Length: 512
Image 1 (tube, rainbow, N blue to C red):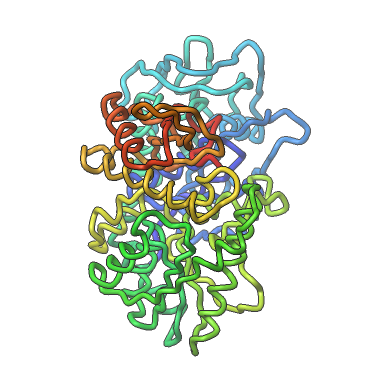
Image 2 (cartoon, rainbow, N blue to C red):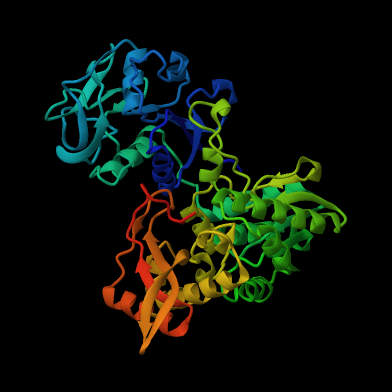
């Protein structure tokens, strides 16, 4: 079974992924592709609509991203948002302008004419603008359906050809009735069936995995994180014991992590996991390495070496499973096309070509929140699904500077106290991610009547929907005071605790 789909042509907007998320929240499958994707490569059989995203360029610029007019003759509805609206107007004979109509932030939107796209909206509402150029004259056959206090064309349409444009962003939360507009486009204009559900995804994906793997074996590295766990359960449902999950202890894990993960897979999920203790090997290879990127490379290469040795020892392995998510896949192809790749999405840090394993990525079409929904459909326990993200390089990127066994032992104790306190006081599920960082500095302190010179640690907790942006979690001061006191009293090497109150951007969630 293949779902009906909306294709989003990406012109570089910071909100493009948000458009896809909003569509999927309405139980319709959305796919993001670079604006210059050839029309012939788009699955026309299941296509029910196209959205032209916003973007940072000006349509009138010489090097601005553009498409051919044939996109409007495919016989499916097209919605242009911000840059996408301006491009639609430009290509079809309208006139654009700039300067006097610049709008950024909230604006009051006024409906001028009845429209299927604006059905059920009040006559006046708040919308979110982010543009310099605007449409001054609409193309022949189009009518203006809405305006703002400073903009005469805030929305337009050509209903007979099912072409629609919005100068504002309906996908962002600041647009008061944005989700109604998106639902109108999907249901009233594209006539979507709204059958994209976690249960349908599981059914479709299990069948697809069986076809891909056949009667052969698939090997997969599991970490205990949400992504690899859900992927492993999906694959196990499809091929059973022909899945060979491998858990590698790299020595960079949290307190009791290895035992907890093995117990979860073997007892809770009834999936046998091979355990490989390579902790000494990883720590030896990391000796003397301080640079964050070099740490990641060392860890990635060591993991590949260990994993390859395990794979070569098992006969009949044909495939490699990974928990790659949709944002990883999107970021590997920029809106400027394949020649301007942002990063590789392979989450083991790069695969050696001579492994010759077919890649199986059952979650590559999902966002993080969708992965959790699929996990619930698979009846994976909620404590497993709500585990905080944990970086592939582990605690190595939470120790600033060289990684040693002593530093790891200190950080594990501190991190465990912090995370356990969040769980004990009902705060763990209210934050996206929480952890401790060990700084490469010592500070003076006093314990009893003695002067100390101990380690400084930083606690970090953030709230987020998908990790792409994040705000620092406003944890209660009395909670932070209790945690700080317990850390200093329990971990003799630490005498100073700080709390990170920076957001992403400009900071990142992890320190390295």
